[in-house]
Image (cartoon, rainbow, N blue to C red):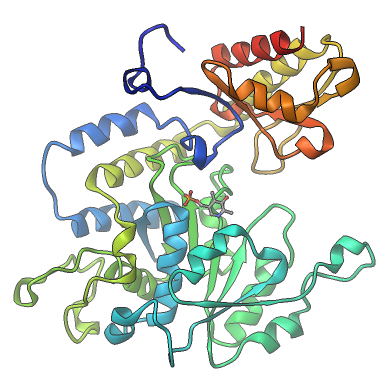
Length: 402
Ligand SMILES: *Cc1c(COP(=O)(O)O)cnc(C)c1O
């Protein structure tokens, strides 16, 4: 928040002070300066993208412990590629047909409680989602989300994968899903888009048996927002690569790096695949590599302490405002602590919803966390705020009430 005009001022687009956390619709996270510098440098020359993908794959392999790694256009893009790989395997004809899956096994089994808006990314490859189980855990009767027999019964000859969305309190445990899926010879795809930090989660899901895992490159890793990581089994990552790389290739001279594609496994040159629209440029690939290197070296305890201090300072600075009650709620295992502000409409003269709307009209706009507006609460997430911006949020909240 300097007084210098930003690029957004030049473009006439209002900037946002982001107290809502790493949200795609607000631009993800602040890209690491090292990653942004690397992107500028990457723009200066040409490389073969498959070579750069192979290099990124080497780093992903190193930090995740997976057999292979690849970069797509966000975790959502990685999920589409993962699904396409599970459907097509090394069959060039099926690759060419997707998303048309008529007559091709293409069911993806999921516990019903794992369904999210992001599973459109799975269906986009041509899969049909078969969801099983109930939401009975919410009844508090001891009933579980999905029984293992239900999961097993849902897996048929048409099943190509079981999908698992990783969340801190999600059920059943990944190990349970892996055991049932592997028993039936079916791979498990994990959506772990927002499960970083802790950095150990980069390898945790592979260690627990996942065959493919998707992470966002533009959330806590703080790489380019339009990147996502796919890590997992080499044969599946290879299939994903073939369905993503630009394939206007002349067959006699098509010579992708051996680490990425084992040519002996394929009968010829694939066509442009289902993933072609999920392009990742050389600048983004290089930016992600640098950001991922920095992420694994980062002092995550110090970062948590910073976030806690910033959330606490916001909560403290608003505690004396009439009509507001504040608290700092610990993040779960992966999330940052946030300042939770309860708005008592009668005393504050404004309810939480109009409050959040009003803050969005400021210049710069302030976006607070709005997941709990229905409880009369908004949240201030410290992860995407500088200390100066946190002070601005406090000032805007106070002046909206006083
Ligand atoms: C953010 C998120 C995604 C999408 O990630 P992108 O990198 O923006 O594509 C998918 N699934 C979950 C659970 C997420 O939180």
